[in-house]
Length: 583
Ligand code: SER
Image (cartoon, rainbow, N blue to C red):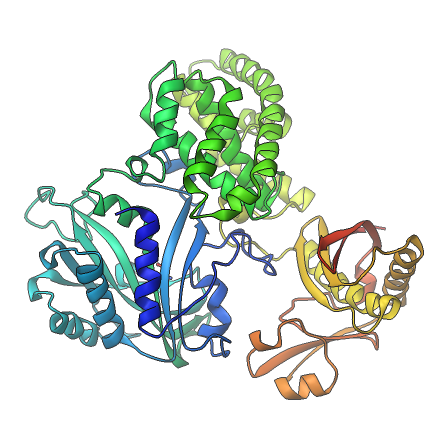
C-alpha cells in the first residue's frame, strides 16, 4: 500500500466514525514564536485539549506535517527523519479509552490488514501520580490482543507530554513485530533491537502538568499519532523508509549521480532535501537564527554530503523536480511553491559553496597545528561556525572523516556566550527545542501591543491583528488593511509608538473572566482559543489586550521603535516588520 493510500484510508475511517477532517497546520506555527516547528498533531490543538470548543466538534482527524530536529545528527541511519507526517485522531472530551482502542484495533487489523499476531501493545504500569492502566489493557483484550502480547511500562515509556509542562497522560502504544529473531529471552517491545517497531501511540490526556505537579483536566481527551513513513515501510515489507516510494525515486537518482558510494550520505541528502522543501513551502527561509538556522543546517549538511559523493551540485534542481513530481499529489504546496523552493535552495547552496572552500582550508590549517591530540578545540569549531558559517555538525563530520573529534562542550560554552552577547536566542533553540523567552523577545512582545494600538488610531478601528511573530532581533505584525500604507501613515504609526515609549507608560496585568474582558473592550485575536479566565494586559490608557505575556513593566524599557518594512502579506492583509533600537 502506498503512503497516500494509507493516509486516505486513515482519514476515511475516522470520518466514517464521526470525526471531522481538519487540514494540516503549517510546519511553522503561525502565532507561536515559542516553538520552532510543529512537532506533533496535538500541538496546534492544545487550546482545545485544554477545554476550548473546536468549531469542527469533539472528534477530529488530520494528517499533520511535522519537523523534529532533536535527532538531526542521527539522520543517515535506517530510521531517523527530520520531516515526517503524523496521522492523528482526537477526542476532545468525547470518547475515551475503550472506543479509542477498539477503533485503533479495527483500523490496524481490518483496514490495513495487519495480522493480530504481529501486534503487541504496551500500557502504563502505574505510579503515585496515576494508576495502572487496566482499563486500556482490558480494552485490548476485548478487542482481541492476547494477554501475552500486552506489556506494562512506567513513565519513561508509557507517558506522553510535549516538553516539561502541559496536557499529558498515560499512553498505550502499538508495536509491529517485524519477524526478525528476538535478540534474547527478554526481548520485548521496549527493546530497540529492531524486532518490534512502534507504530501508533494513543495518549489518554486527562492530566495537566506544571511546576506544582499533576492535576486532572476538566475533560478527558484522546490524542493519537501514527507515523506515516514508518507504517508505509512496514506494510511494504521494506527495511527503511528510504526504500519506499516517498524517497526511492530520489535515492535511485542519487545512486546514478554519485561517483563515490555511501548509503548514509544518500539518505542524508534525500531526507534533508525533502525536509527543506517542506519547510520552504510553508514559508521558512535560511538565516542564522532559530528556524532559519535549522533550515540552513539542513541545506548545508545536504550539500556537504553531495560533495562527499562527488555529485554535481547543479543536479539539485533535478532532485527537486523528482520530489515535486512524486510528492506533489500528497503535498500540493510543493507544486505551488516549486520556483521559490528551487530559488531558496540554490541561493543557499551558492552561499555555502563560497564559504566551504575557505572553511575547509581553515580546518586543515587548524588540524595541522594540533600537537599530540586528536581533539579539535571548541575555539576552532566556533571560529569555523562564526566566520565561515560551518554548522558544528559539519565540522564534526569533517573531523571524524579525518580521524579527529571535536570538543563540543567548549564549543557550546563559547556559543552560549556569543548568544548571550548578541541575545541571539538560546542554546536550547539551537538544539531545536522550545524557544526561550529572552529580555529582547519580551520587549518586542510589548511593542507589538503598542503597534496594534497605533495602527488602530492611524488606519482605523477595524484594522485588526491577523498574526504576529517575534524573534530576538525583530518583530513582524500582520493586520487587515485594504491599501499599502503611505509614508505619512507609517511615520504617524512610528511616532505614536515612540511617543508612548517616551511617556513611560506602566504595563499592568489582571486576570478576569473572558466575558468581562471582552465587555471591557480588550483586544484579542482568536477569542475561541482562550480559556474562561484570561489575562489582560493594559498599557497606560492606550492598549488593552488579552494575552499570556510576559511583558516589560514600563514602556520606557523598549528603546526606539522603527518600522523597517511594510508589505503585503496576503490579500487584504499588510505586514509590518519593525525593530527596537537600544538608545
Ligand atoms: N502526541 C502523541 C505523539 O506525538 C500522539 O499524537 O506521539
